[in-house]
Image (cartoon, rainbow, N blue to C red; front, top):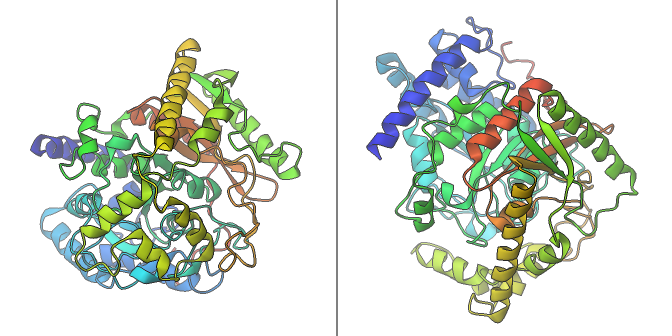
Length: 530
């Protein structure tokens, strides 16, 4: 662990030097907060143009101006009341001995599924709105050790599904508040898009990092399942649950990943990651990273409800076709299309895996002596869970991993995984790409909070299932906007533990295209310094 820390620090020092050399101009009074990166912040601090307190206060001002007021994105569950105090401590440390770590004074928006010992962890539910765990999650400890500030816990789909919760109401899309922000990490997604924090953490069981990233013009990485510890996170489906970065740039995603990866004795699955973690994900980023690589394109929809005849499908398709042309222009050899054998039938067999949920939730709650309830059944009997989530959770009650149906899930997963890696080998592919969603995000239904069968076409056209169903990594990067000014995500998919490669591909694409644009509804504050 000490060797890993030394390697990370060396990589951080190197990347910081590069970042300062290339960061935005930062003379006193000229730091531009909106769209700023980790390197920009550290360069400004080094130049004396910014203090940690100033940075944190300006993010707090933006949250106050836009989150609960127009456009009322509703991304923040709890603001850290000690944020400014922690900023002062970091300023004092910087004055005496420099940066404390690679995330020095980086304000983090943390999905409220992840435990914090000094802030409530609600899981999006009113049942837990006052629940303060007695421990920090492993990734929280790692981020704090690296100098980060947990600025706020973000709203999330209740118990990790969709974009509504009894603890807060409805999360809204930063680019169109009438539309859904995807889920369940929707608060982190809209919040980072609107520049309410520097970087964010999401959780992805079936697509909950990449969905909000795609519809909010962000970078979202779902890592290989064993790469990041889940200790201190309420589970949904342990076989596919994972945590990962949600950021505005690929470089920031790589910097955050550098901090949170690695073996954790409290999450035995992370032992599989030993030997698969590079010294630095940041140092592996290159502008010519796509030159000479082979990329396959999946055209077959992964959602059987996708409708290629609709106007909004065609709008997304136009953006995707342009993105694939950009891959070619950046030097990639594109194989278009590629086909996964029997993909649709395998997805159908895999999509209803709720055999793990009740056991996992009950075991997790038993770890907390101060939890307000101790079982999934008690959660449902309370009657406080929003109807749509309650109706889906109740289907997991009474099911276990000993059920015969679970064997069918495991067999289908093995068949799908083999089919994917064989197809990639047959075509000599380095990665696969596809649209994260084939359709634009739907309009929020008027009865989203009250109807257990809300007809809002939520998640229509989702292509997120391939990564969790195989356990392989996937990364969404901004591909541009439809003619309706709605973001589209291009998703890179690779073999296990190829995060460094996927980040490099995404970085090269990002640098060549610069598709990310901030939402116009949350502009710089008039009172802020330019």
